[in-house]
Structures are given as C-alpha cells and as structure tokens.
Length: 583
Image 1 (spheres, rainbow, N blue to C red):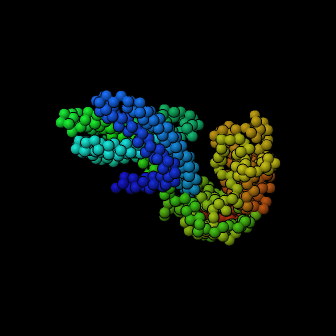
Image 2 (image 1 turned 60 degrees about the vertical axis):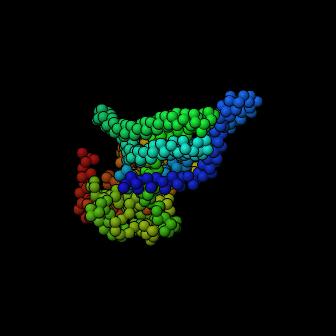
Image 3 (image 1 turned 120 degrees about the horizontal axis):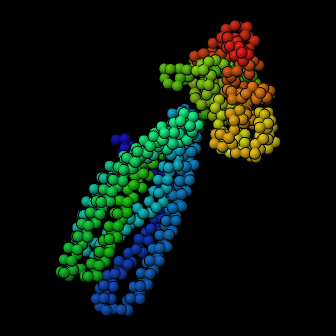
C-alpha cells in the first residue's frame, strides 16, 4: 500500500514536471514522429526492390529508390540530433531548476528538521536524485516516445501486409508486455530501496569526512571505513536485486523475440508458399517486425532509468510535503522597524511532549538593554536563545517583539533585525571578507574593515597571506578557534542588528583576545537589545539584568550587584570562578 502511495506521489511530480517543460517535450515529440516515419523508408523500399527491381527487372527504379533511402537516412539523422539536443537540454534545465527549488525548500525547513535529518541524505536528494530525473526527461523520454511511435507505426504497417500473421505476432507481444509490466511493478520497491541505501551511504560518508579531526584523534579510521563498507554492501545488495530484476526482463524480451522470429519463419514461409504474400512482402514484414520488437527491448532497458526516476520523484515529493517555516507566511503580519523591546510571557518549551525544558519564563527587556543568561550546562540557556531566534516556537506562552507576537509576524522581517554569534561558529569556504560580509553582501569595504576593527580581526588578518582575500577553508579550518570567533563577531557587528544574541561569544578566546574585544562588544551593545550567554561571569557584570537558570526555570534575577548582595546561587558561581582564575 505504501509503495502505491509513493508511485502516486511520483506521478504527481512527473505530471507537474511534464507540464512545466511541455514546450521542449512537444518539440521533441514532433521531431521523434518525423524520425520514426523516416525510419520506415528503408523497410518499405525493401519490398519494392525485391518485388519489382529483382522480381520484374525494373532497373529504372534503383535511382529513385536510392534517393528516397538517402533522404530517409538524412531526415532520420537530423531529427535524431535535434530531438536528443532539445530534450537533453530540457533535462539539464529541469535538473538546474529542481535543484534550486529543492534547496530553497530545504532552507525553508525549520532548524528542528536538521536536528533530526542527516545532512548527507538531504544532499543526496538534491544532487543524486535529480540526476535520475535528468535521465528521464532527456534521453529517457525521447527513447520511450521513439519506442512507442515505432511500435504504433510498425503495427499498422504489419496489419496492412498480413493482418492474420500480425494478430499472431501481437498475441505473443501482448503476453510478453503483460508479463514485463507485472515484473517491472515488482521492481519499484527495489528501486526505492536502492535510492534510500545510496542516501544513507552518502550521509555516512559526509559525516565521516566532516568529523575527520575526531576520526583521526581517536584512530577510528578502520572503524569508519568498516561502517562505510557496510553501507556499500547494502547498496550493492540493492543494486544486485535491481540488476537481476532487469536481467529477467531482458531475458524475457529476448525469449519473446525468439518466439516472434520462429513464428515469422514458419507462418511467413507458409504465406509465401501459398501466395498469400509476395517475397517482397515477407522481406518488408521481417524488417518491420524487427523494428516492432526493438522498442520492447528499448523499454526493457529503460526499466532501471524509469524506476530510479520514479523513486527519486517520490522522495522529492516527500521533501516538498515537509512543513516549512514559511507555510503560514501569508497569514503573518509585516513587522515594522524593530526598536528592540523583548517580552516573554510565561514561556514554556518541550522538545518532546510532556518533557518541558523551559518552564514559565517571564522577562521584560527594554529596547537597548542587556540581558545575561547564566546557569549550569543543561539549564536551558541555549534553548531560550533558540526561541528568541524563532528556531523553535514556545509550547505555551508568548514572545513579544515591540508588542508584536513573534508567532504572528513574518520571520524574515524579524530575523533581518537580528545579529547572532553562536557557541559553534560556522564559516564558509570563502575569503575572510566574504565571511564577514555574509550578513550584508552589499557592504562597502569601509564597513567591513570597521566591523573587523571593532572585533579586533584586523590584528590577525594583516598577518594572513592574502589579508582579507585569504581563503579560510571549509568551516574555517585554516583559522584558530579564536580567529573564527572574532570573524563571527565582526559578521554580527556588520549586520547592525536591533537585537543581538551572543551565545558564548567569547568562549573560544584567550584572556588577551577577550580583553581586546570586550570594549568592542560593549560599544556594539549600545542602542541594541542584547542577550548574552556566558560562563565567564566577568563578561556580564555590566548587564542590565541577569537571569540565573536552573532546570529551565528562572531561579534568580537582578543586576550583578543585586545578585552578589543576595548571596545565593549567582554569588556561589561567581565565587567559584574567581577562586578558579586566581588559583
């Protein structure tokens, strides 16, 4: 039943795809019709040659027959070239547009989707699956259309030459086609498993290479190689089932061709002997019958192409059905220019139903103020930041931005006013300049360098081989942790946000670097509502209010001086850090 739904989903995608590319498909079909008509010139002329040129000695017909054959061959070659070109380019265009659309769709999915999904599997859907679709729209469709037209025209010609013999031949072909259709339907699950196994294997490889430092640090090369080998074996088993299934189809088609040939020899010879057919009729019949059998071989060979494409289209449809963050964008209200007041009203959140990790948090952060979040690991600080970033929505309660319910405003409007430095900074494999300007792609050189100075990036950038044009490598691997952190801070500075979120923004900096950028961050916070998560309590002593979290609850709140005077959990944390740094 599930397989049936997948096929239906794939057919929905295929129908939409065919409609979108209807113009090149129609042109390709027209060229294919002309091509197939041209291919029957030679079989038709063979009858004339045998019956009239050889049988009656009408040698004057040789020149016009040769001319028609040359014309048929030329038309066939030209239409073959253009049909494959038109549909091949259409296939490439389809892949280009589908990959772009799928990436936009994936980027619209909530962050929680990526918490569960394997990135390699998602990449496989965008890249590998679309290649199968390219084969379907390009050479696959033209071959399929060619096969169908050849079969239709050939069948009509055979009926004209000898309808009794043709009915016998068609009976054999229909039985063979019915068997082939049933066998191919049984292969769909195999094709789907093949694409799933390919996605799993790709995901594992991506994960291994992405964590290569950890793999090498723990001498786990053999373990990872073994895990990848296991995935390859699963992929091999799926491919084996696919290949053997197609082989059975091909063997059945070959058997059908043999039966047809035997029928032509026996019944055709009988018809000529009893003057039901001329020798020229039989020669033309045999040639056309071979043209009729050829499409069935082609369609059998296309089984893998169509099966993989259908499976890929089904997976693509599943991805489109995933609910994106923008699914209700048309119902949300535009957000006016943000000034930065943030209010949390009894906000609770649970990753899994019945297991809340944030409990009834109340908070009022006036525009331009700084709120610090402290507490032990697992207390809910980062989860609260995810809610402020709108990566997740509260299970209950409301987050208000300048009095507007965050759940009812356009996320793009809200996030365009955010600046973020997360605990794990991500840099793209580009230049230092590109990574700083990521928040504002059109930023001027002066603005980029100003942000760099505030974050104290220029101190190490000037020592890099190509300065701001130095390529940082994938995930910024060519830079130290502190350098990556300062580039992330410069990126947030350049965004000129109204609301700034610093999640362990100085966690990767040594004491000297931290001192250097502390003044820059303090200047950046002026006029901006800032949320700071910091284990180093010395970095948040100037915060307007400090929330101490434990078990997802706010257990203390106040300024640094007020919490020190309160002499409870915050003071114990502060005293422990002071003792640690002075010991």
